[in-house]
Image: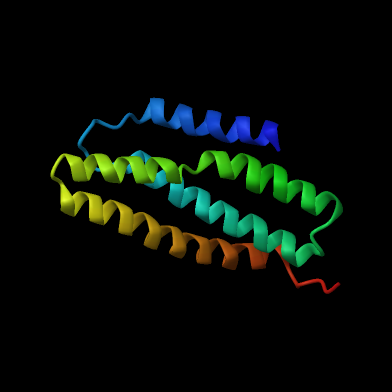
Length: 127
């Protein structure tokens, strides 16, 4: 899980470097990272669920890729900080659209990810 966390944090850092955000602007990079991570987590967890019980290699993949990589890749702590900075800068509409938009888009992305994961994982295995 620690290696996964390192990889996810590194990917997030590199994207932040490649697409830097200017202070006071709507945080598009963090938004995209969080929505992409929500989608990927939906795919991963649904596909693993359909492959069988949360044990053995499936549990290791869930913890390493889900909790580790995607947990470190998504950055909801930055959501709180960026929202606070926008509010402090007097940009209430930007803060509201960013915070609310991230949560709403993350929910939609998760649901889409679950739908994709259901197709990838195939029929649900019982037991």
